Length: 346
Image (cartoon, rainbow, N blue to C red; front, side, top):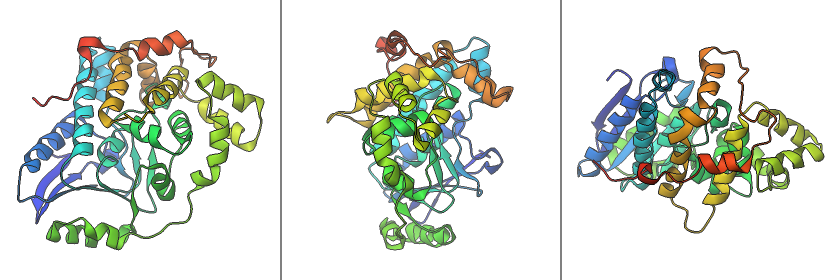
């Protein structure tokens, strides 16, 4: 298909996103093509590792291509989005659990659905231009595609901060937060990929990785833990409003752009997930509770309208005063029963 190039080269299964004009946004068909390739290569003794990369300088993958999903939902078809998210999440789990090395090269923007395919493999490579984020609350969704797992595991309250503000992480920040592993300058990526293809070993990644200065998020950790320690979004907002500082002013501005329901659900979701029994599948199942209901009960369609369709940047959020009733969060995160996300392969 024209949007993705799937092939084998040497000992490597190669997946290259090839729609740089759309910032390599991930369509349902692209997801399914990756799913099929990974299933085939899992049993192929001629393929020792997988390499994920993308054409263009601006983005590895800016997120999911939600135009069709929006169009279907506004015509009353909510099943398209439910199917898209279900199958995408199954792909995210497969990448996370894959028995062979999965190596991703993440230049430019890696956001939303791009995190789902690019940040769950065994070796995640960033460069100077890398900008990784989970900005879903700005469109009335929640950090999904397994992003909630990494947010829940991030140091201190970094997960709440990244998930509710959509803060963009450069290479050092991404490594510190657990979204990436190695920094390698972009100009030597072709050389490293050739070595990977020829050897079938992931060792060239560590051999070419370079050190970075300390993360700015690490420097912010004390403030983040102080202000984002609340049990609910209301607690966090109160702490930010009642303790003015440069940090709190910037954080409140970021929160003010996003859906209150989405942010409240994000905080609750991360608190529920944090435990010694946290797994990728548990994180995805929790995310699916929200996204299954998203086109009917969340701010998702309004967020897409304001940000992408009409581009007026003035969404009419539910609970616009920022005070989200606990019952609203409970309802959108309640178990789905027979509709729950499962991981059986068809």
